[in-house]
Image (cartoon, rainbow, N blue to C red; front, side):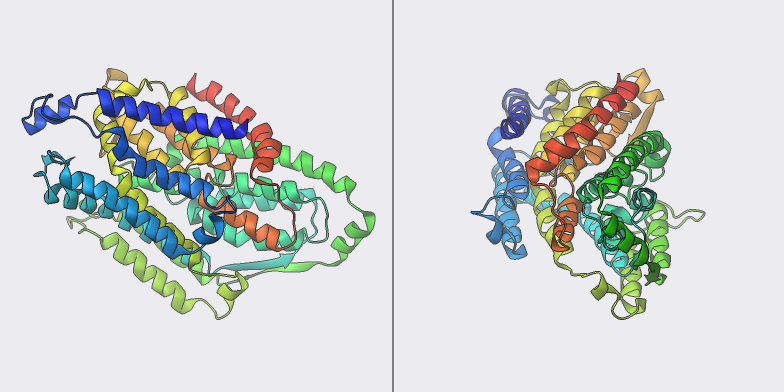
Length: 493
């Protein structure tokens, strides 16, 4: 049944895109370009397939025995991404009309393909530079120790992680806290639920307060959403969800604690090792990352001055901060964290492809998204969320961000809207898209990047984690879906 639901969700989304692509004239585009509706149309469904295929590869290649070993190598991920990029760029080069961006229409042919590539890289480079900075700097912080694994101790770990995730990223917070949490619980037998809640809270839901927390929100920031908007607009939902999950976890872990063997608990209370922190200089570098991301906006005047920030100035600053971290981090700290560049290189390879291939569905949605029938926050919350559960939540966010931006403006939108590069988006719609992408990334192991990373680390330390569908059926669906239903009823009805 779960497999059928996955297929149904994907086919419904593809059907919606197909209807928009095959039957909706590009009236706005044609008028701007001086063409008649009969002379051109939006991209056909065939040209959206690279986007769908790349996301499906990310979701299912690691799960299949036929492909998982081939998929482990980053060079194969890059090869797959480049082939699909070529598919899209050939389309843009061969079609008979240009590409609309920033109010300009490119000349057909190679100029259009190069414009699409330029637009993709202008979004991809800031995205990957920030993720790399957060990943590398947070990887230089080592927190080690062995506390008494009481329910309150574990709950505090999860609460701390849910708070840190918004400021050092869900990946950084997961890397920082997973090892001391594993060590603390090493004497206990019933711990699987702890790491499932860790994925929900630290690797996903905790990251919704700033654009640094989760990749979808940073993509929104790159598209013009104010840096402070996520905090001011999403903190009530963050507080409600984290509080509910922490309370539920504390009750569940209290029951599990009573089932533990008394000898194991006695050993746990004796084998205590105070927490030690190494690489604390990296917190200063992380503060620099937060300040640079919030204050340095290319194309705008720097705060309190008349200096217009040039292109990639922010990325240069982030690169300097990252190099500073590499130089000043004490020797051995990253080795303690089993740090490697493999995960961030994987993200770099895949998102290079994603940023190019998503231009086709984004173009469709920008011009005809209003025809998909999504108009209400409740619809955006669940549609964005369900697709973010099985596809990658970052490009899913972009697709529905563009859909919301294509909807006709109303007085309510203008009064209660968020000004972005796409236009004014109704704040309830943007809240629904943001929360759906970030929160429901916790529904599966593949909804957000850190999920599988945490699962792998936990299993490597001898803790049995549920299977892909076991996690869904035993943990995320029974725990999260009722909370999401209440959240959507309270906020988006």
